[in-house]
Amino acid sequence: MSERSERTIGLSTSPTSALEPWPETVEWRPVSRDLIWVELIGLASFMIFVFAGLAILWALTGHWIFGLALAAAAVMTAWRVTVIFRAVKAWGYAERDNDLLVRHGLLVRRLSIVPYARMQFVDVTAGPLERSFGLATVQLHTAAAASDAKIPGLPPDEASRLRDRLTALGEDRAEGL
Amino acid sequence: MSISVATAEPRRRLHPLTPLLKGARALVVIIAALSWQTLGRVGLGWFAAMVVAALIGQVILALISWYFTGYQVVGRELRIHEGLVFRRTRAIPLERIQAVEVVRPLLAQLTGLAELRLEVVGGGKTEAPLAFLTVDEARTLRERLLVLAGKATATVPAAEVADGEPAPVAHLERPIHAVANRDLLISQLLTPQTLLMPFGIAFVVVQFASEATWSFIGIASTLTAMAGVLLQPVRRILADWNFRLASQDESLRVRGGLLETRSQTVPLDRLQAVTATWPLLWRRKRWLRLRPHVAGVAAPNAGDDSGGARLLPVGDPETARLVLGEALPGVALDAIPFTPPSRRARWLHPLAWRVLGAALTDQVVAHREGLVTRQVLVVPYARIQSVRVVRGPLQRRLGLATVYADTAGGPSAAARDRDVREAWELAATLAERSRAARSVLAEP
Image (cartoon, rainbow over all chains, first blue to last red; front, top):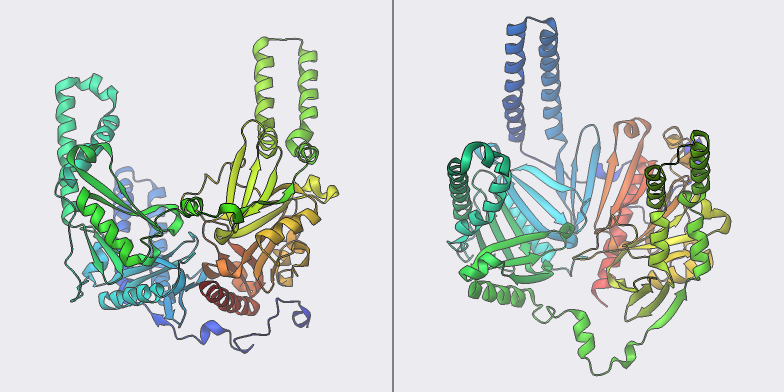
């Protein structure tokens, strides 16, 4: 009952019904599932060195602590793998009439609302792994350093389309400050 | 990535001498990295060989990067392509370019080349230097970009235009407020540094008296330490002496200073946010301080406390209302209806819960925080750059969320630990209101 009596920054222009928080009513577009592979390979290429280093140390010294570290590393890797699977599914973006929505994060869930009019420039980047899977990352920059609108794992066509749309929509508007 | 637009003009490379110039630029860095110590150990011949090897490597890298760097104008945007392994394409709408500069560093001057620098507002860094082009290329590209951007006339700084106007009589200054030096002195005496100073002195005197070793170095170092502690209040007094605030042409003029008189301009159309601070020791006097956050292409170093602009170094609530009314018309600090976070957030902030708060008025979003030094941040809707909703693991368990409204170069207004449903609503409202406020600004 105390929940009801709480004072809130109550607003008459409520865009949503109380039962349906609005991020669920937006049509989210997922990022490519291939991003899972990109992240997994990235993880694997890092963990190989960790495992090899620990294994060599264990073989040389025979100390049990390295065996323990190896087991810990294996557990951590398994955990990271599950996180990667779920984290890639957590990424999502939506183009609304006036702004771009980006959500991501598993432990800390983040949602960014970036108006097209605030866009300063758009970066399309692709690392070697991403390119071998035919993926690219689009990042929208605003004048605020805290703005956080990065969408990884887009197919190149979609990335180009998104970039063109973002810059075209941004151009209609004024200075952006 | 396939970035091929049929109608676009071809990608152009930078000048072929670029790799050599960049390599030459790296020469100093290479020598510094190898260090003189290495020179002493390996002798001059080997040292020269190492430098040359590193230089050749550098030039080869620069050559590869030159080969894969290109720029093109597509419609009304400039695209810059970079990178062999990590590819990046940056698309900059020409409307967003604040300034285009042709810069000629020494090496470029010797070879008849120039660098084109594009200022974009993103985070205060020069986003896209095109180095190097021939001077003619750079000039024509600059003209072209400015014409396309439709601000060929806007390159003249606004101040110069105002000076050149035949009738500057209309731009007279209108004084708003002057801070009494007595208040300034008292306010700086009421800082922890100054108040704790007598205890420090007493401690040192007792120490010396009991030990009875009055060495010159001991006294000198104690004095320097004290001077260091007192530096900040003294600097503030020096900077804000005879503080006067006036309004002129849509901007606020701040003057003050004892040793050197400074005059700062706060353009109101670039004012992103205002922070009001109530230090603990000023609370009896109900004094507060107002600080503006201005988006600048070249912002002064924000870390220096005495260097940042001040709207009001010290003042009572009435003065603050007057000053804030000039900076953000229609905003009154005491009229902002702060509401505390959700009750479930009490466990997260047992002491500060009462202080934390956020509010929306018809023009601004504001937050309040700080148990000891209370702070209120006011951000007009029209200045919001983006809105974020963040939920940490603990917050999700408690059904809470924090909503941020980001500003350019300033701090973000944060509605901490709101009930999650309220947070979504808040984010939607912020996005909606900032859009409405922007469209009003865009059509004056």
